[in-house]
Picture 1 (cartoon, rainbow, N blue to C red):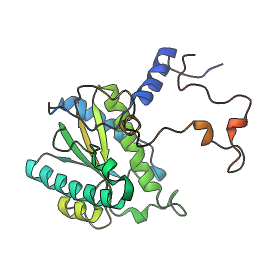
Picture 2 (cartoon, rainbow, N blue to C red):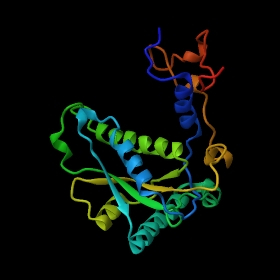
Picture 3 (cartoon, rainbow, N blue to C red):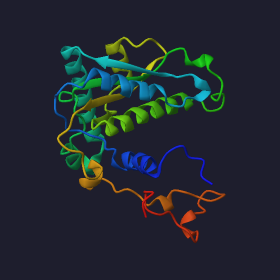
Picture 4 (tube, one colour):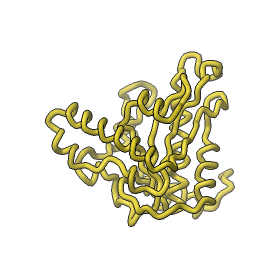
Length: 230
């Protein structure tokens, strides 16, 4: 007997939102309804966190000059990344990797300072604070998709330089620039898949049974399509 409190249609909607989430780079500049933004940030705040430490902090960038400075930092790192990619430099240079100057709302997600006092769940895995922030970002991402808004995660920046620019205290650390806004359309596939940068691997290759490398793909019942609808 199923213990789900949700209807089959509601369950399928959750899976659909996950399937159709995209890392967006193209935005319209239209403003976002403040009530919707509040819902999205509340969704982020309901993420799980190790030891219930809630290490996420979100900085909304409303100063146009500051947005331009952030964009300049990202552009600098984008060029350095292109150089580091060697024979894929030209291919990378054709990709649009951010929508900082176009999106309706720009956020910076950061780790809080004073995290060392939180030992619960972090004694051997201190990086679980970062995992907690990632969960908050994913919550925001999925909620945004459900609201018909796009979100793009930008990681092309020097965290020390960005922390200094935003006045983040010692011990804190920016981990993501988040472009949030209205879009003309969601990509039918992940953009990096559409541009042949990489392909999604078969989940059977990535799930093991009992020991590393014991691929579950040899199981008589391999994974089905990512949907509750058969």
